[in-house]
Image 1 (cartoon, rainbow, N blue to C red):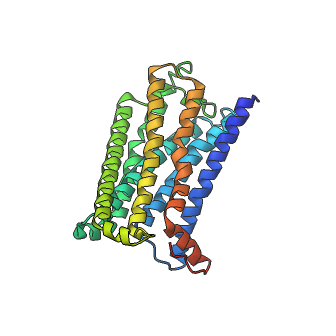
Image 2: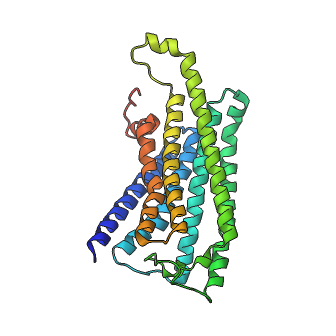
Image 3: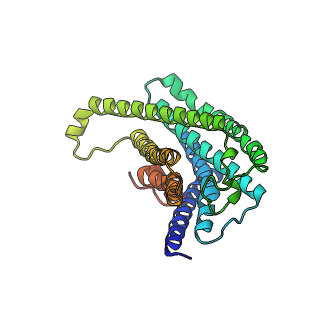
Amino acid sequence: MKANDIILGIVFSSQTTLGILGNSFLVCLFIIMLLTGHRLRPIDTIFAQLACFNSLLLLSNGLPQTMAALGLKNFFNDNGCIILFYIHKVSRGLSLSSTCLLSGFQAITISPRAEVKARAPKYIMPISCLSCITHLLLNIIVFVKFKNSQASRNSSRLPDFGYCSSLKDTNIVDVRFGVVVSLRDALLVSLMVFASGYMILLLHQHHKQHQHLYVTNLSPRPSPLNRATQSVLLLVSTFVCFYALNSILISYMYLRKRKLWLMQCSTFLSIGFPTFSPFVLISSDSQFLKYCHRLWGKNAPHL
């Protein structure tokens, strides 16, 4: 095994393990809080969903890439490859949708319209269920295109991904399907950016209105709602950064010759947000620390 492969395996395994542990911690925390009768915020439902989808994304992409880098080549048969590819597509779409829902919900939460704010939590689960059904049905085309590509596979058109030689054929993804997915991604990212801009504007207006309080108070503390909003903004910013960098890299690979190291960089970026998102939330939202103190029977610190 080459030194580069060992380093790559260590990077992917560390990234995947760290991400799964972080997301699993959030999911277990929410489950235990519910089972012990503690009250959760409506936004925690979205956080829990995002953690689940990110874990699934890491398992369907980061784990196979780690195994391939460590020398376990082509260890999936045709059926295993297509199921893995399908799970990866679905979990990626759901992670994107959940992040968009998160930014939209928080924008509504801090908006001055009380009526819309009060009704918003009721729509979290219906929207989440509709999103799951949509992504499950949309990606069924993967199974159809895979079957059609079996008879005319041209393995020289793309470099080997390592863990799944059955996915080397470009025919597995139809051009029309790629356009639909790209439009979906562009729409959701645009909604995220719009909601984030709206939240920044509201926070700025709130700061100006209460500026006299900050002058008289030597150590002003932002409200819990403002802290939660800042946490969501940081999370969305992290997602947009990883998504933008990966999109630029993918566009470059389509215009130029695809190289294995570029595809490996794309994999690192694609699982970057699922890896770091739980730690961004834990470090920026003090409510998670309060949950932990409640579970361990300690008084939550004043944050």
